[in-house]
Image (tube, rainbow over all chains, first blue to last red; front, side, top):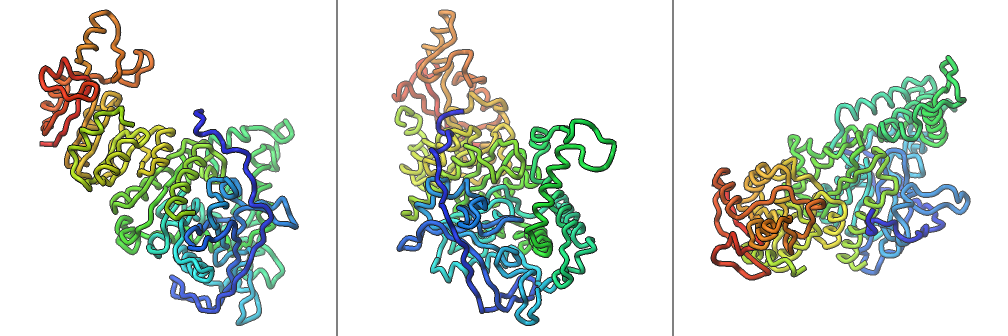
Amino acid sequence: MNEIFAPVRELKSVGRVAPQTMHFEQPLGLRSGAAIDSYNLTFETYGRLNAAKSNAVLVCHALNASHHVAGYYADDPKDIGWWDNMIGPGKPLDTERFFVIGVNNLGGCFGTTGPSSNDPKTGKPYGASFPVVTVEDWVAAQARLADRLGIQRFAAVMGGSLGAMQALQWAISFPQRIANAIVVAAAPKLSAQNIAFNEVARRAITTDPDFHGGNYYEHNAIPKRGLRLARMIGHITYLSDDAMMEKFGRTLRSGNIGYHFEVDFEVESYLRHQGDKFAEYFDANTYLLITRALDYFDPAADCSGNLAEALAKASAQFLVVSFTSDWRFAPNRSREIVKALLDNNLNVSYAEIDAPHGHDAFLLDDARYMGMVAAYYNRIATEVAA
Amino acid sequence: MMDRPDFDAIANWIHPGSRVLDLGCGNGDLLKYLTDKRAAKGYGVEINDENLLASVRSGINVIQMDLESGLSVFESRSFDYVVLSQTLQAVQHTELIVREMLRVGNEGIVTFPNFGYWRHRLDIMRGRMPVSEDLPYQWYDTPNIHLCTLKDFEAFCVRLGVRILERMVLTRGRAIQSRANLFGAMAVYRLQAS
């Protein structure tokens, strides 16, 4: 591989970080017609906001991640942010030049108000009564956080997968408040197959006897079996067939076939492990909410299916990135976005990274991917004098 | 950058503020040049990863895509000019790409090395494949699979029903007026679908 793709020199972490929580009293009207009277948003920031407040970048999380985007916690140095390879000093999103914000979305389970939080009206967890939130609602809440932090306009809003959908929604909802959108491994809306996978995951949770109609908190129960299955299903869709074969092949756990229905193959062990881990820290109701937000995301729906029309008000510049082996949101889905941007004469660059890892590639180190994002942030840095 | 005399020819042809699509934009030099000189607004199309990165670094819009499968992401008549600079001779589906460029652009601009240039003819006469400033490859490592002469290209345009609006033939940056197919090293054509 050519030297221009060589990995950047030894990279540092942003180091120790700590989450903050901000309380919002003003009710937030939701897309569904419901409202949340008051809520907390938990977030982290890295780097310094410059005097002109022009160097802020919002990083949006996908299905199971959080505001903990980079760095580590003092009390748990192993708890490293989910996009730490992307964000930090000298990294593609360079915290020495940009002020980076990660925020846990409404309905989340990492500090932001969600189904597991206490409803001030009842003093009990919201549970099933927590309203269904959409990508638009998240973006509206993020905008309020930006207001509080004094950020009028983001240098960039960035995300992968569901996070990328938020970046796209920002360009539509707040065209004047976003200079660049970095949209990685995205789709302009879910396909029937995508929704189908989400539905299987949700049914796994809602049919778990410990689910109790979503009010499992008061039964001191957790629908762990459902969460495990949901996570296992999800994991299969994040990896490519080739990547799975490469990683596990048909390797047997004990070296021999056991003629039973317990774990024989490595891949079974891996999926169970992922499921078990997930069920320990993730809230089942939040999983339902977030998969629903994915299902409902369709900015073109208000314009009789015309995505170009939906993006007509957008004025941001775009970097769109897809991965060839991603079958969850395949490159064709990103090309739909690119076409709609081209139809609107918007500035857009598009990279189709030939990576073997499937949807997960957006979280992994790939010199071409990282190089592209770094080059694009260099451009932004010049624009905003970061 | 300025060892590309075709850049000037192209810049002189296009109207200021034009919308330009550059197919096979390489490291983005031409589009950058047209943006700086003619306030052009546009996009490059490129398949190669290194070129794509260089294009992003140079500040232009670039779309990673294989020209060989057509230009379906671009609407008909969505550009003033579609440029195919030093790319025609390296593509597989020549006819498809020329048709597509004239669908997407109001006009097309094509540049290519003239295989009929006397030095190339002389090389062949001497029994060797031509290697020159404009054909800087050995036979075994060349990306060029569809080389042609000016006459070949013009016959191709007739067959496709493509109108030639203007032609400029260059040798080492100088315009060649007579016996261009023999004395011209590089051709620049402005085309339109008829």
